[in-house]
Amino acid sequence: MEMVTSPQSRSRRRLVLVALLSVLAAAVIVGAVVVGRDTGILDGEPPAWANTLGGVLQLAGLALTIATIVWLVRSGRFRADRESSLRRLIPSDSRSLQQQVRRCAPQDEADFGLLRDTARMMINQRWYSLMLVGFVITSFGQSLLKFTPLFTGLFAVLAALGVGAVAFSFRDARLAKVFLCAHPAPDGQDSHD
View 1 (tube, one colour):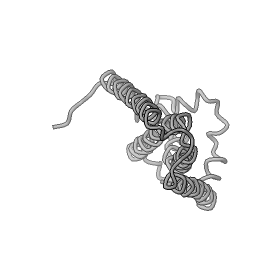
View 2: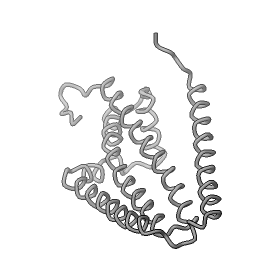
View 3: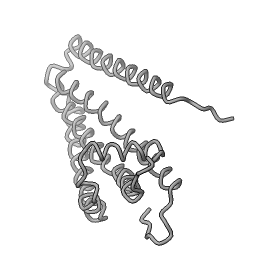
View 4: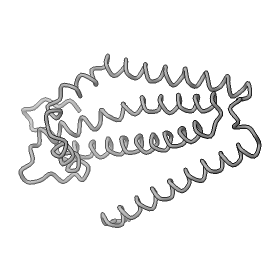
């Protein structure tokens, strides 16, 4: 039995989830600062294990970011996104196309070529989240090296934003695949899906 949900209930659930994640992130930051201040562990002088782990994580995050950039360029994904006709659109038109793809509800006058290009670009963009993961790993390494509440807080904020961005990019990719399946290319066109 499939449960049907209205857009208002989904929007309400998303709002509750964002509020809960924000409260959890704030609690983690406050807890880290309080525990760190009371124990003296966050006074700026990291233990040897944190210093070593921080350096390794910084290098690993940097390597992941560089490897992702090289892979995106060599695979042609970067060039395909850069040369896309969607780049010439104004941001409001681009957002409108993305909303139509997410909802799988094209408008009557919609250009299906642009919508299909938008869906393909949304699928390709999920790979850019690997760079964001590299930045989060680098930030975690930096927070271990510095061992101060400021860098711990910055890492927590960056990690929360990174997790949200990665989740949204994979959700958009999934919705774009559904759109492409629901609206296949005409017979005469070559499909790059």
